Length: 57
Image (spheres, helix red, strand yellow):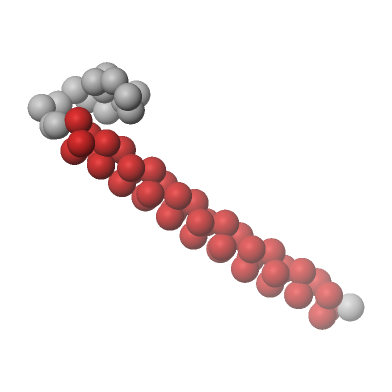
């Protein structure tokens, strides 16, 4: 954020520029954390499915 514009998706507020930047970074961190958990869960699911298919034969 090099300008004083409000980032897309955020409502205009009285927060300082530093606080707005901190909130944006925190939001990105939350999204990345949830995404990492979802990918990990899918990998475990895929492993269990492949293991089940291989051990059934």
